[in-house]
Amino acid sequence: MPGAIKAVVLAAGKGTRLKPLTETLPKVMIPVAGKPVLEYHLEQLAAAGIRDVFINLHHLAETIKAYFEDGRRWGIRITYSYEPDILGTAGAVKNLEDKLGAAPFLVVYGDNFLSMDYKDFISFSASRAGIGTIGVFEKSDVRGSGILSFDKDHRVIRFKEKPREEEIFSHWVSAGVFYFQKSVMEHIKPGISDFGFNVLPELIHDGEKIFAYPLTNPVWALDDPQLLHELKAQTERTGAKEKR
Image (cartoon, rainbow, N blue to C red; front, side, top):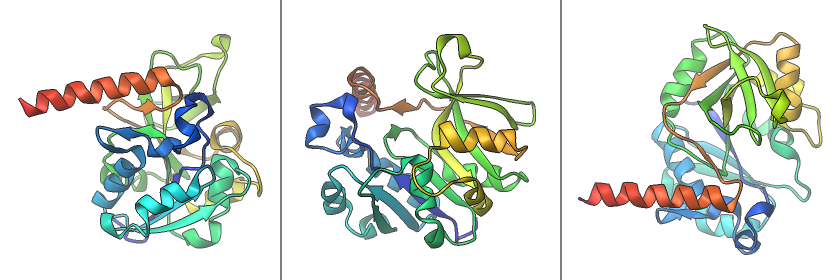
């Protein structure tokens, strides 16, 4: 695996729908089975050999910095990128363009809970001649997600962020995990920009090759209290089984 690959973990969101919990705690710091959601991401990235991780910050930034510090406890180097005004998922990455270098890089939505084999994800992505790869999973209710369809070669042919009921054409959704070539920066405008609403549709429209990497494990988007409750209930059941 190329050692130069770096990762951007997005952690600036306010988590408005999880208030009052997120009034005093960043969404990515919500504990699941005893540790913050963000910590799971850093552990999995470190396990894959990723050593340089950038984390964008906005809401309650000092809470995140105080917990993770420079990242050495996880065997990584963390560089923080504070945003006075939130730049969006793609805008945050564009803001780090000079620091990411020329190698491919990863983007991870820090407020999703998932189990990810990044070594395999990188190997899959590097073996395909595309501008990027999206980690995807199947979901029954896709209204609040980015949906996509892909062909037999796993090339993404259509993408729609947060579709209305009549716009739903697939139950494959983005897991918020991406592998990108540096050339993706040419498709991200400076300032506020979003991968789902702006960049991915433009890439497909322009004929760029993007591939889908299907995940076999569930993905939990910490979007609302009910999803968070279901996630915690499941991890408690899993933990109880493991102790038997």
